Image (cartoon, rainbow, N blue to C red):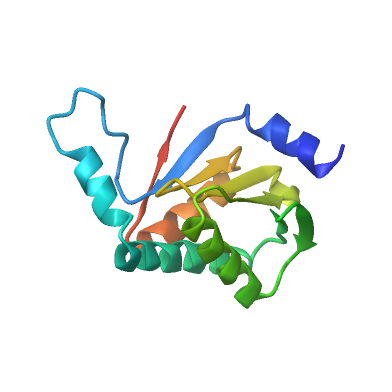
Length: 146
């Protein structure tokens, strides 16, 4: 099975969200979600969020090999600077996406330029526990999406 087939398969698995918020905001919420979202898309705030995402992924890459798809090319364990640059490029151009396969765990992490979160598909209990620690250390949250 090639990497793209694996991504398609994993997109149907359990999904977790690495987010600035501790849980999904309900549609009927009385808060001002869209105004807050717009605030976090401001360049300075987005820069801080990108750094948090980068720190999580760099630390996670200490424990697991990454197969990273960016610009339609696959790279095994790109350099730390490349990985950070790709995260920032993704978020600057809202049309870009980066996929990270952790083959040993049969897990997918997606970074989409038009989202303020990362998606995590099919994590094992061990991987989820580690990511919970890493996200907490960065002041972020992880919650189950489905």
